[in-house]
View 1 (cartoon, one colour):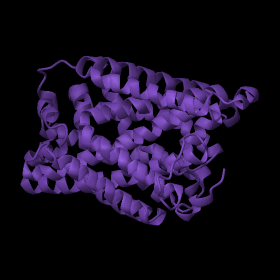
View 2: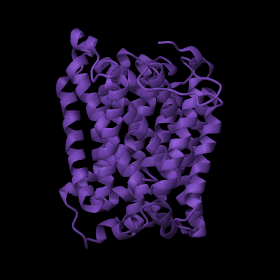
View 3: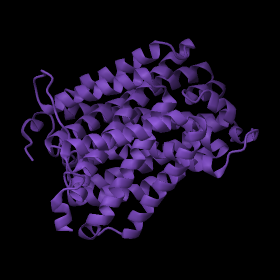
View 4: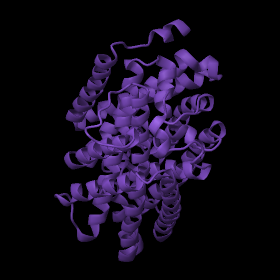
Length: 441
């Protein structure tokens, strides 16, 4: 593969282990806590803290495929590499990789709208034109930081990660302490929450952990990638489990389930008011702004690199549209434009749902490809791979069933989007699987 203009912005060994962990947690914490806590509680009810644990377990099984493949072939844009190693440069690999890229763009718009929602809370503004305006503003800010290269991204991510993990931890401890260690969310059993709802909520919990793929997509830019990609992934997931549980119990100690659901787009700020007073509320809003801004930054960095990799691998077409500079600069622009459009036209709930559908389908394609074509070569356990595949399928089925009841149009959007992606790639590449894959295996 010709790296040509890639080297001007991204260099091998330019991201440390700490920087990789900061990037992973930056994406996960920005989306998982501030954007998805209320969405998970709406489906899981008082058991919503346990949904984060269940989501972490599923994510742990999923991470196995990515770690094993990345250890064997560390590469920037790593998910595209994994899919091509399994299926060859055909429409299956390209379609799944494009789904991953789109799910990352969706995550950007999700976190950007969450940023806007929290920033407007002190002014008691819900909805209206200011939400998409601020969302687009923070996406553009992420673009400006990203065009300055890896060093700025790594330093900024480290600083933001330290601020928000410390701040969110203090919020959770203070909220639990001020409530007298009561779990208020368990005191309102007015609505029955079934097993299907709990399993469906895991789709959002998995989405809250999907930021670990940011590390996979940084690949060879990480120092000692054969060791540090896997270490960074597991460290990021472990840190986020602790933070998510602390905050989930903090929110649940201050608010009933009905209150969490009513304030699902800004549940942490709502929980801070009774627990910590007006000052605590304002500090939580500031913390949310910091966390979500850094989440957008890390996500823009990762998806633009993945799109550049797909372009280099001839898996998607590319047009300069009259722009000068390297391909990475162009893919940054594409990423920012698509994320901005989503942030303008979709609300938080639908953005999160669409991202969950795209990510779970892509994840299943990865697990099957590794199991079918590469497990012996990389020494992977077939049982673990099939377990990861089965868990994804169960969660996807439950999530689809719940969405067909509550918001069937988003299921239509998701199915249409997935079908369009694979149809486009089939037309562009003229084959589902590359012939050399069939010959090699």
